[in-house]
Length: 373
Ligand code: CO8
Image (cartoon, rainbow, N blue to C red; front, side):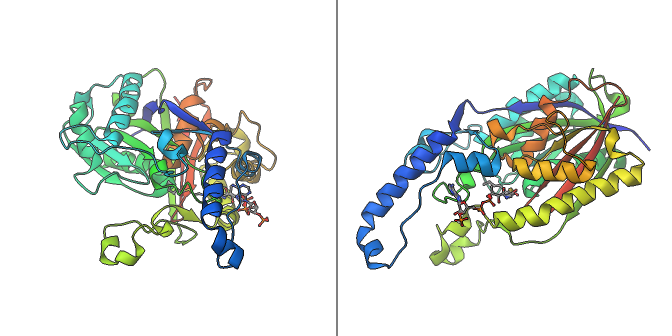
């Protein structure tokens, strides 16, 4: 079978960051305003007072210390709590396109590819900023790439699912070199008024170049040894925002049109499924877990990653074996595991093996076994 490699990655990080302390100060100001403005209903027992959030809880429960966002002041304004993103003219580049172009340029430079070398663009992310034309087609145009592009969404697993689509396209002969992008503007779909989840997400964009080993010239190349995808239907992570919302005005603006989850259930159900998928895959390939140098795991929650890597290895993983980036970036949906890979592979030597794995809504799980060439 033709060898397919990842020959470059790129990362665009928005310039503004919000610490837990800043986020909690804004949330608690909102709680104070709400409780003051609803004092009579609260006193009458008609509604419960809102409870304040805490930076200590956030770090202890998730490992998150901060998150990058595309707009800080709109989110931190307790009377707004939504990023301020003025609409742009159709003639101007969209925000997702702008982020993706920046990440793409780094990945292309790393892979030594020009626009003429790429013939397929996949935008794989949790949320597209418009229905159509596809974000991928706009990005393709902005970069001067010919061929074709399309968007796909498998929530937090979009990147690993995108890598498999890229690999399959090259194997089937429908593409030569694929640019796969993950522009995640999670702050646009996060309910900053929800104490249980207001701290979870951040914004970022990652890019990955996938091509046949025969055309690859990059200094750093990672062979895609195997990739495995799995989906299991669950309502525990859900967002009902969609084009049919206007068909029932009573639901417009309700909290189910933003990200919502049963965090505890997600934790309990997803961790064993992910550990089992990675273990089975490694076993099938005859790779002992101890031979895996690194686990570039989806970055949702530190305890989740510790539990998954422990189940696979049969002991606690070191910080070097399962690196964390969510302390600085929070959960960036599909981009998280790619950021971990992008920042933590420079020490790989030929033959070293790593596992890139994502998991999230659907449920969806994608695991890609990579070997340094
Ligand atoms: N401050 C203080 N206390 C709090 C807060 C807060 N902010 N929030 C909750 N508490 C309290 C609760 O009220 C509760 O109190 P009590 O025990 O008295 O009832 C206590 O803290 C414990 O609450 P939880 O049980 O909710 O806390 P957990 O320890 O379970 O931690 C987590 C919560 C961090 C959410 C954890 O359950 C978790 O990480 N679960 C897995 C989540 C996950 O991985 N989700 C993946 C979803 S991402 C995805 O697929 C992509 C979707 C697309 C993204 C789109 C962008 C928005």
